[in-house]
Amino acid sequence: MSSTDMSTFWDDVYAARPAATDPRPNARLTETLADLPPGDALDLGCGAGGDALWLARGGWHVTAVDISAVAVERLAGLARSHGLGDRVVAERHDLRGTFPRGTFDVVCAHYLHTPFDMDRAAVLRAAAHALRPGGRLLVVDHGSTAPWSWNQDPDVRYPTPQEVAADIGLDPATWTVERADAPRRIATGPGGRTAEVTDHVLLVRRTAT
Image (cartoon, rainbow, N blue to C red):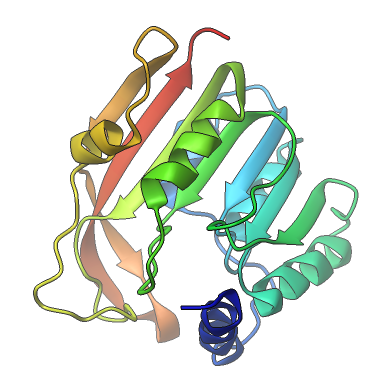
């Protein structure tokens, strides 16, 4: 699958949704980072932009990336409209081939799933290496299928946080797993529909250079 085809798929996904004017941040992001001092953050797969805007409002400088030009352009416009244009840089990346430059205090990857081939472990490994000492990588994956998900494959299997950590293969002398669990919550989808879903949460801290 070419980068163009993958980009077109996700452009179509986002273009089919009404543009959000004030998208909500992910619950696992706010509960995990609320007490951290602001710094530089990288949001992988920024989507509608709720996480990036929440971080920027909290004083973070955010690099937000997505393969969808629609998502990136919408987020850039939203950041400006909310007076956060100086705190949010939105970039288009196909993470299979390019990765944002810089080092970060936090890298977050929420629901970085795709129906196309992607070496996700390599992407998350690159994210861990982009952390400054003391920085954290927050990976939140689906642990169940919401009724409104684009992927309704009944045979899909979601790797556990422990399996994700093992796949990334980080040296425990440099990175420490601080959290690996599967909490449940009530999620709200398009049109206000609600359902109980499971998240797979992995939090890794870089402890050394």
